[in-house]
Length: 79
Image (cartoon, rainbow, N blue to C red):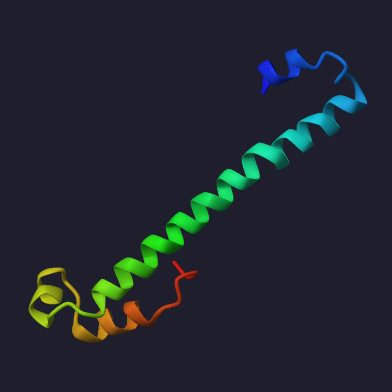
């Protein structure tokens, strides 16, 4: 952030905070949004796979078939 601030010396004083907030909105928030989408995609994929695993493998993982069914039925946005 400091290197960006050096590029815009006019962004000082009160305008500096506004400039920082706008840079965060432009660069950081989209990255966080992409991280959330990536996490959701991983959850969808892993829960679909979990729904098709045989009970013997679930047992190896320390889960009952009911645990597997409950986890695979959770919506992707829930951890």
